[in-house]
Length: 506
Image 1 (cartoon, rainbow, N blue to C red):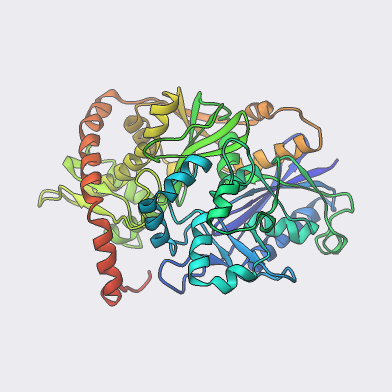
Image 2 (image 1 turned 120 degrees about the horizontal axis):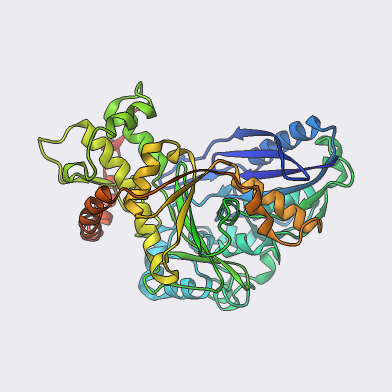
């Protein structure tokens, strides 16, 4: 029997899952790596460190089955940017989606109309996560480096290049650069001209199921593979985690909330929004990934657990306390923008806040308000989708934040939709494995993936709570709009007096 490895190249760790050809999971492993954050707004990674982690995962999983690996396929974090020089050496680290140093360039692009052009042509909302803005920033701040780079690629392309010697990207990853034309599915020449970037400095384009080639001999031996092991191009984690929970069309929305979060859907045509509220990334000319990514998911829950209750209190303790309070937290509203925000407000300078706090509020109300605020924000990220493509029948949810019954019910009540919980927490690698089967001509459609997905439970809205939330959500949105005018001023004050905001890490 031969096997397929699906690998998810995440922001803080890479995960690998070993599958039988019939889709049965055999084993999985994960290896973490650090973010480089030595300067304000910096969020980089060493691509060699990630490559080392991926090699270790492949070696260990391959050893488990004596090297009988038929293919390796990939799911990857989006929006990373790496510059390669003349001798194929990395001239930069991997600049991740979380890097906000191009914020000023985004602001300028909003003012001069470039941001709107980028969104309308590529489906990329204005935010420093996008490589198009990172390129503009590098060009302005380090023009010598900009000129030296011979190829601009992302972390998935880097790893595949190291293993095969070929530089190619798929449509879903290319869409995440802000440089891929929505309609032609080619690099947008007008945008390239505007930022003075040669087309030859970008990777070639192919479908996610494309067979890049065999692993080079050096790595066949080093990783314990066989000489026939093939590398499948794979796709973005956003796309694969969506189809990996059975969301193949607009009938359902996928909601994933881990450290960050996202709400996504698949539409049959390109749809952009006059308010720039969601992204639109093409997969092919009849499938488009629409959605809103949020920075502030489980990471905000962890902050609240440690800050409000203390580091010794568990996540379960926090939720148990929050559960003692009725819906609405006695009018206490929490805006969870502790790390800036992407959808729905697309403001990297956004800051968090409690609104409506009085002497009558105690830790339980604050705890529930934090959880409600995280979900209110996700609801906002879904608002544009619901207006443009219609109401879904249900949400299909995954992620560490949604492990408790209480949080699942909270989501159902706030969205006023049934919540279907998916057992498989590695939906990205599962979908990557199916891409490998497509590429190897062992399957002719992704539809079979639905049969492999195990729904564990359905949560239906509690109409009493729904009524409370429908009364408080408009207030949440009103405050969100009013505070938007002050976020930049607060952020500038914090940058002006950084010593005032230093604290020891727990």
